[in-house]
Amino acid sequence: MYFYPYNCIVAMSMIIFRSIMADAVNWTEMYIPYNDKSKIDDDSFGSFNPYTLDDPLRQHLHLFKTPSNLTTPVYFFAHSNGADASQLAPTDLDIFADAGYSVISWKSVSYIGSGDDFATCWSDFDLVWSWFQANAAQHNLDPNSAVIGGRSRGSGCSWPMAHSQKPEIQGIYMYNALPKGMWKENNAYWEEIVTKESPPAHLVYNQECDKPITQDCVTYPSPCNGHSPSNGQIIVDRYDDFGLASTINLNDGLKNKGIGIFELFPTSAETLTSEASSSTILESASSTCCSSCLLIILLLNLFLSLES
Image (cartoon, rainbow, N blue to C red; front, side, top):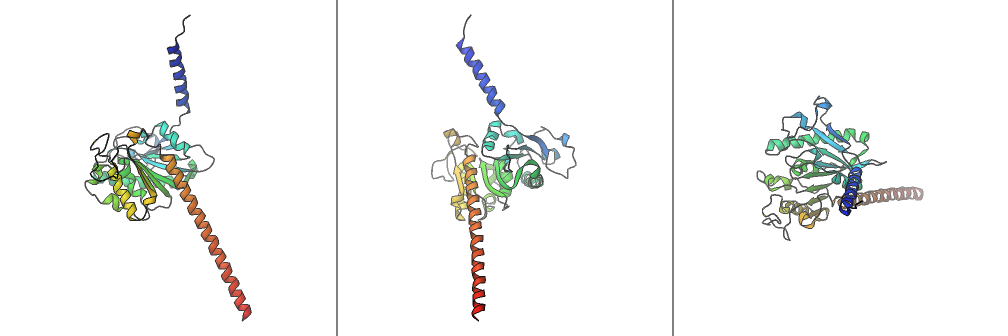
């Protein structure tokens, strides 16, 4: 009988790989229609990518519900140009699960090439948001805690919602946000929509620029890449103009540093949780202080009335 160490190693590797894949999470539900007024049978939705702006079957989403006894915050993801709502891999969903987040990945126009495409995408996100608010309780989602995300094309589709000043939006986490092609027609729009009320943001980029990042940056390892961190730097500077520099982070060079697209999300989410807790404590302290002040005023009035 012959013993082949190599074959044994391969067999053991396959067992480990299958075990890992078995433990990996995946979408809880797919192709959920989010436009209640479309009157299209739910079974009509499926994998028919690409979708144009006049195709009602584009209006669907995928849902990943992270296991929890409590309601979970939600990360909204919009895919890159030409991809679909299932662009997130099981390993990506694992990261969100570890961070305690559920995920809504929504579909709209597959390719963004015009102002009409953007307008359709933006109105579709409004419908997605309405679906979320109406169905959060059913899916154990926290309707008051959302992080807005998007990849390349998806960042443009999500940008107005991210800065809509909805109190439920706790932050932004986007990859390769606002690529060069989006700045051609209206260079000012993407930064002008940022206000002093904009939520904390974390922008991450695959390419890298020398520091400090300037608008004539030559990206590496791929020179002249349209997904330049310099696009994100415009947003960083805008936040700084409003005194919000401490609420925005830009990390570039993910490829050079071997960092995954969502690898930094848990840290970003943890920061948002800390800020929300601090805000709650301050509000509680302020409320307590106001109650104490009111009691003092009442006692003082009572004392003065007795004196008179």
